[in-house]
Image (tube, rainbow, N blue to C red; front, side, top):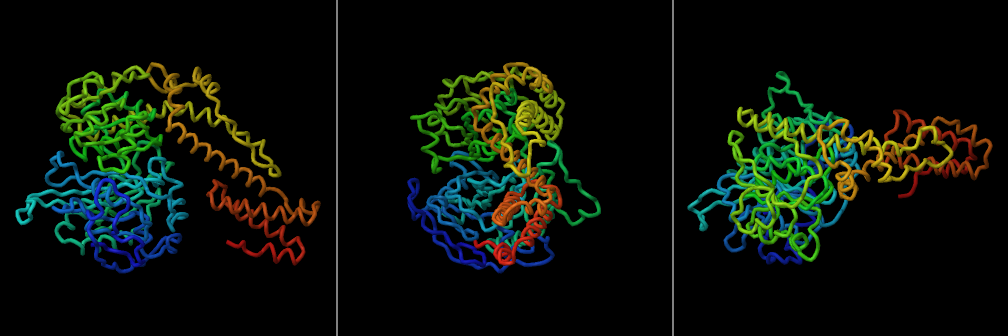
Length: 605
């Protein structure tokens, strides 16, 4: 059964194409239920132009209900979505990723997440609006361009009325937003009610979501959903790292049911507890974009551990692929498990014992047992050799031949061990570990930031009548020379081969992604400074010395500058665009009337 918005849905729950891993008949047919248009109300000025279901689309791509059919296997029963393009095999992948492997033994309610490729990079009608909202988001919270996240609430309970003897069903939220904590909290409000009351609950939830304000960084949002109110704040790139800006007020929060201090962070200490003796080495492996596989007993532990690994290098964005939960039915299974080439730069989370053999050739394997309570001690274990990972009952640990560049930090291990012995709250242990990773990453990235800033041309070299100067090229040797006096030793107590670590990092996808982002920001800053310098000039006096042809050429160039500034959201001083428009109008008015009429015409699309 499929629930639809007021637009005609471009892709119903149609038969998938070109599926190698499942017969097309395994996806059940769909009936249609039309949802009423979204309600209006008091709106932000920018959001007043949004159409019904635009707000829903700003948060979610679609909602799926995946059930288990004795004859068909996993099958989509309900799918709520806006108009989307048909993408072969995607629905089948969602079906398999929404259920734990049979060996996981997940009884009761289980929550986890997965991530999968977007079949085609088709832009949304909300593209410009979402890009504006993304501009102020920190790197790790920017909307995914080429992937979707799937947030799952899976229930498996005994039911003698069913042939199989079990009720097995998943409610899945598909989104481009990496708000893991938020969507898991949202599912806790939605899923139990849905399993009890079925489709009417989903209709009510969708209408609630379409009344929400859009997820814009910096705002504190109160989000009603099915009788409860969730209060969140979307972080910005200007926030001080490691702090929460959401403060609960006793007066204004009387109607709020749930206050989330974070929308995306997982409990690092709980996730790394089985292997916390090796956290510094794991940080290096993630920083360098090494191929990593996490073998865990359940999708919940698998996905949480992969997300913890990705976030341990924050505020640096992890730029390679990662799959919190990966199955043998995934469309990238052959690509990622082939032995004909080196494993790709990706972090995989798996639960199927089959992967112990299939991925045995991978260079770094993390084996996670059942995550123990914070009060239970784990024995210190050495890094294990890969040849020891031959049997399915291999002990938890890190299997790798990797030799860390930095000396082991014994102080953080002792601090965490002391916390376990003294039964320090898990939240406090998590805060200690998160602060450690943050300071370690900042110590590593500050010398790079300082060197890249030196590549920026001086402001005095910017002339309004010449093209903006170019950023100087990144030179690895020049950067290495700066480390002698201004390296990480200024802010980190760790000793070791920092130079070797930087050399390796400069070849990684994480450096490439970071440098592209910084170069784009610097280029936009140069464009903004150039435009501001141009606005300070007396253009009317200048055109008096030039021909009409040159004046028209100036107007066209100024209009291009204006269009670029608006499209790219250049970081301009307030009032700059107003000045630029005034300059354009003044130059046009100084021209003959026939040219004025032509230049005042809006450009044809």
